[in-house]
Length: 507
Image 1 (cartoon, rainbow, N blue to C red):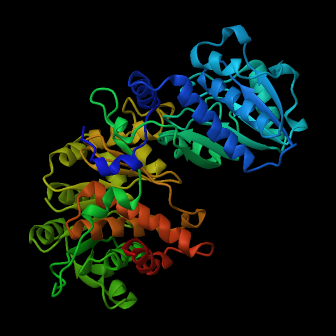
Image 2 (image 1 turned 120 degrees about the vertical axis):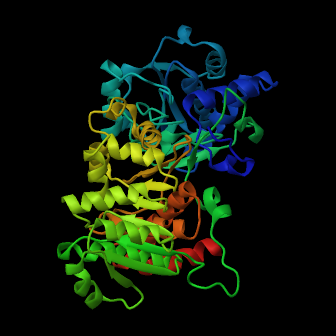
Image 3 (image 1 turned 90 degrees about the horizontal axis):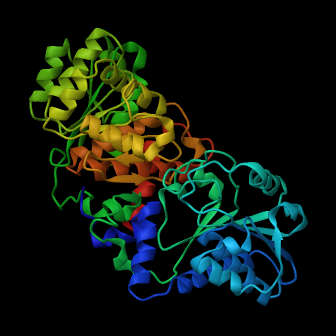
């Protein structure tokens, strides 16, 4: 497990257990738990106050744990601010313990049974039912209440996570609250960024409740290895080029292409590699496709033919290739498989995508053994379907484990950085580090978008950026380009959008 640098602390995502340890450490250092709860409840009340006017009605749904205690504090403060507050408790008051019981003592209004409230009769609902560690499905009367909240059409503010969502996985095992805003504390959890949790959270507000930043790292208790993907995670590794640099020093990318049927995809990757700063990009294709590539342009791309797998392997061994992208429109025949095997045997930094992933999955364990043994860095960029083919019939990849754990396991299995693409793309390294991305747009769901991503990763690898950081940067930039361009995007637009995104991060 890698040690976290101090400057990455703001990007760290804490597991449910790590957040509990941060709370416990702060309390042990002299801050009473009720003080943390008061600050948490105030943050929730502040969020509510921004959304309603004095005199409007608020329904606070409190559960039996500390989340419910936060709800009691928020209810008291909102009443003091002039709101009409109804508090419903999903337990007997006598069942409240510790700080939650103390918080309940500060509430002087009535406590209503959950079954007697109608969310539709209020202007806003505060969801303080269950916290991030809930591991069972909400059922019975409470499941019916969740459905009522979701169909009432009222603004919902959730405490920590929407009830029913697990903070580590973002999964909902049963009914879950759909919030307009979620107020959480100290650091985000993976479930705030992983789907469906991300969509269910609405706007996420991170509140300071007095936990000191140095609490982020306590050996054997809090050792974060999951991060929110942002420039601060990889900016220190960004390739810099001095005055007088020449194209060869900026790195040469090769893109392995197949036959005539798939000319466009590898060219998208090659163009993206150039746009991200590589000095050269060469398409290596089968002889029958050479003329088609040469006729397509742009002039900045070069083409070379490899008559057979041995010729392809010789090109990789020549030492001029700074990084290889292999897979887009490569083909699924025996020759394509031989090209993938040659790439696996080489020491060149490689990005394996599309058809190359299918070959690796089909030739497991032989090809995964080659991945584990190779000297050069490797990055795999599957979408969910390709991922399932990579790990088919391997134990430990069941969907209920969550996307983050599955990606981490795959990185260890393959000995490579794995980028599991989607609206909540995860980048995981074999050493246990992982990042969850939150840039992007539905416009990126278009043919060729993944080919561009592969080219950006390869372009950064060719400029000697470390594999994990290169993959994180590529995913963030790719998503940001999609955001900036917006509706109407096609994959050809993405390389052209990169200079604008690069200007943004350099500013």
